Length: 170
Image 1 (cartoon, rainbow, N blue to C red):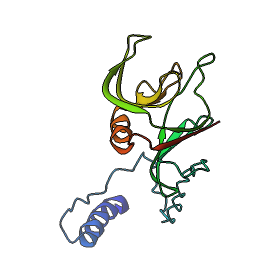
Image 2 (cartoon, rainbow, N blue to C red):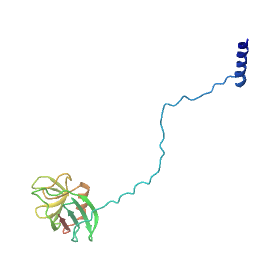
Image 3 (tube, one colour):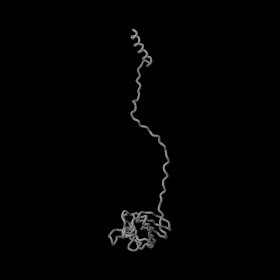
Image 4 (cartoon, one colour):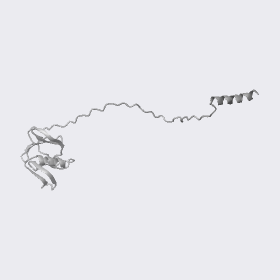
């Protein structure tokens, strides 16, 4: 008889504690992910490094300066670079670009080499032997001329007058 009284009492206790209604509790399923977000810190950006532009190595008061060792050229005005440095290629072994101070002898915007039969757009002739600034590939050495990119060759052609000084240094 004792068992008969315990069951109804237990049922009454459960009903009293739950308020007489059954409520479903929504519990999110346990997470199987271990993703964590790392704290972010804001660190200052590194200071930009200044661009070092090589100074023209020419000593004379010339209008154009070429450094063979640096493969660079400049247009000068009153001893100061006003354009450049720009990349150049120059003479290959056996066809070296001469070193020295020269004067522009003549110019030809649509010249073709009489020796090699190759176009030499925007030619500015400045040294004996037909040595000139002109448009040419910057990926291979020349037969003595100073090759310039197409847009740069036009700038040099327009800037260099006949009798303008040109210095080429090793």
